[in-house]
Length: 634
Image 1: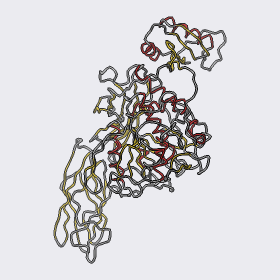
Image 2 (image 1 turned 90 degrees about the vertical axis):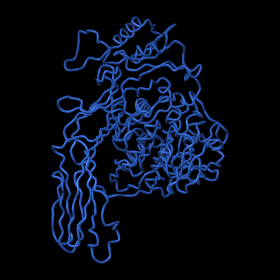
Image 3 (image 1 turned 45 degrees about the vertical axis):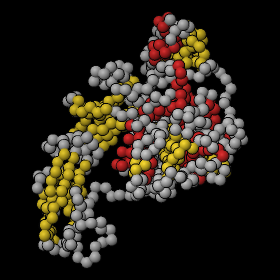
Image 4 (image 1 turned 30 degrees about the vertical axis):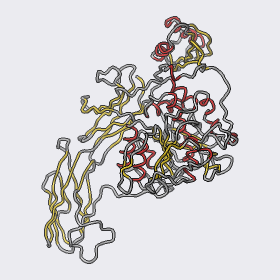
C-alpha cells in the first residue's frame, strides 16, 4: 500500500554529440546535438561522450576548467573538471570549444561554489512554557497548582559519611525534600505533596505563567507543568471504534479529553483520492484538486480513503469508525496512481497554499492552505538502495515548511534501514510503523533520519489499522502509510490548542513527549536529543497535546552561522519557520556550522539559557552538503 511512480535521473554526467558527426541514425536515447549550457553547481566533474568517426579536439578558455583527453580520433569519453582552489567564492563562466573536421561549436559553462544547507531541530531538554489562557479548557487544570520534576544533576547532594569511591553520588530522598523546600521558600510556594523527584507546588495568588517560567529557568528543575484534573477518558460512540486498538496505544482518548480538533486547522491528504461521499466523511472534505486528471473533481481511491479516515473520519456520530481529529477539514489532493515527481511537488506546494501549474500548464490557485500535509507514498525500494530526493522536491518541501505547513511522510514498507526519498528531506516528520504490541512492524523501514513511530499494524485483519474504504466500507490495512496519518492527525490536535506552533515547534514537542520503544532498534531512544532507528520513540498524543497547550513558540531569532577555523563568523543565515537555512557559494575548507536561538539579539550563539549546537564540516568540491543540528539548551 506504499506506491509511487519515480523518474530516475543520472546526476553529474553529460552526453555530448557533435553536430552531424555521428554517422548513420542517431541513438534512440539521443535528446539533441548540443547542450545549451554545462553547469557545475556544487559539483566538480562531468563526462562528455564524443561520438565522432574522425579527429576532434576540445579546448577551454579558462585555467580553472580542464578537459582530458583534449583531443583524439573516433568515439571517446572526455572528462571535464573544475578546480575552485584559489578562486574567490562566486559565479564563474567559461566556454568549451569543440573542433572537428566538419566545423566548430561552443558550449557555455557555468560554475558556482557548493551550497551548504541544513535544518535546525530545536530539541531542548526543557520546554519553554507559558499559559495561553484562551487555549486552556475550563476545568482541565487544578487551580494554583504546578507539578515539577527535580533534576538529579541539579540537586545538591548532602554531605554523607560514606561515599563509594569512583561512583557519582546520587541525591537521596532527603536531598530531594531539601531542594523542594528551598525552591518553595525562594519562589513563595508551598509543597503540597512530594514523591521522590516529583513535587506538587501550591502557588496561591500567583501568576502560573510566572511560576512556570521561574521553575523552567532553575537548574534544579528538569520539567514543570500544570496539574491536570483526573477524569474519564473520551470515548466516541462509533460502532467500529472497539477494533481501533491503535488509538489507545498512543493515548489518543486522553488527548480527546483536551481537544477533538479545530475547523480552523485544515489537513491535506496527498494520496490517490478520498471518497468524499463516504458516510464517515460527510461535511469533512473541504475541496481539493486532482493532479492526475487536472480537475477540481477528485477521483477517489482506496488507499487515500483509508489514510484520510485515520486523519479525520467523522467521529462520535454513531457511524463506522473514529478519526484522530473530529472536526479538522480535509483537503483532498490526488497524485496517484501515475504521479511523477513534478506532480507530487506541485501538490506539496498547493497544500501549503502556494499557486502552481498543473501538467497542462494552467495555474491552479488553492482556496486555503493546510496546516498539516500527509504523504503516505514513495518508491518501491525493495533493493534498499539510497534514492535521494530531487532538488525540486527539496525545494517544494522547504517552501511548504517556510509557509508554516507541517510535512508528515511515511518512511516506507521495505524493511530497510534506508528511508524513502521524501522522508530524508530535512524538516519533515518521517514516520515508522509499530504493531499492536508497540514493537517495530515486520515491514517497516527505519533509519537514523526517522523522527517518530506510530501504529501501522500487521496484515489485514484485527491486527491491522481499521479505517474507511471505498463504497461506504471499512477495512483493515497495514503499512507506514497507515502510521503516518496517526501523526498528521495528532499534529492537527496540537495546532488546535496552539495555532502559533511552527513546524520546528511541532517536531520538538513530538520528540520530547514520545514514549521509548524498547529493543535493539531503539538503543538511543528516550533521550530528547538523540534518535534511534525508530526515531524518538512512539508518539504520545495526550502528552504532545498537553505540551502544545503550554508551549511558547521559539522560532524568533533562530539563526545559523558558518564559522572558519580561526573562529571568525564567515556567514550568518536566517532560519525559516521550517527550520531550514542555507549558505550559498561556500569556498572549500573546514568550517563549524552553528545553529541556535539568539535570545538576546546580540549576535552571539550558545550563551547560557539559549538553544545551541554545532557541527564540524568539511566543504570540498564534490557536491552540496547538508547539516542537521539538534539543538540543546545551554
